[in-house]
Amino acid sequence: MTIAVGVFDLFAYSIPGSLYLSLLGYLAFRLNLLEPAAVLGLPGFLVVVGAVLLSYLLGYLAYPLGALVSRLVPNRRRHDALAEFIGRTPAARDRDYVRADPFLLLAALQLHDDEAATHVNRTRATGVMLRNCTPPLLAGAVAAVVEAVAGPRPAVAAVCAALFVVTAVVLVTQSRKHARWATIKTLELCFWLPDIDDRLRTATSAP
Image (cartoon, rainbow, N blue to C red; front, top):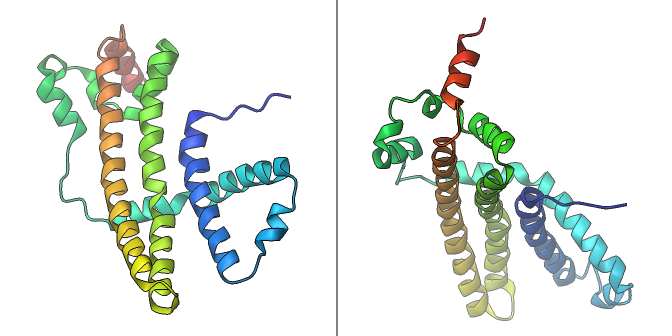
């Protein structure tokens, strides 16, 4: 049996989920809910497989938290991907495809050139990964604040809390940038798709 993990699954779920798992593991050890010796005594293969599965599940379950944090962080530098693309490519201004939904355009691109669509999906997945990594970092910042108040090394914990917060904000801004890049790249690649305007025109005019 072959198990295939897509790029989107790996980036959007597994990597953020590993951060959640690391945070939960830290809290379990710190609160004496789990002994390190009990984990080290397990077979290494089972530990690795369990960590991978738990990372994926945690990332999947906590997926909405990334979108929530992204909405809560102010977006002071709003960039319109379509306006940026048309500004660089005036020949596309009056074409029908630029007014279509970007995900519909991506589906058309996948049918025409799956390799080119993979590049767009990789960029989108990277943006989602960065966004979904922010909640565990913010939760880690809260844990670091508690450590700064009650832990044995308050200075180190305070520095970690500040770094976690700054990193989370930077990740949100970078995720928005990758989402814009993915939309622009989709528009650029679809510019060269044959008959895409005619197909969209026919689809929208059909009863």
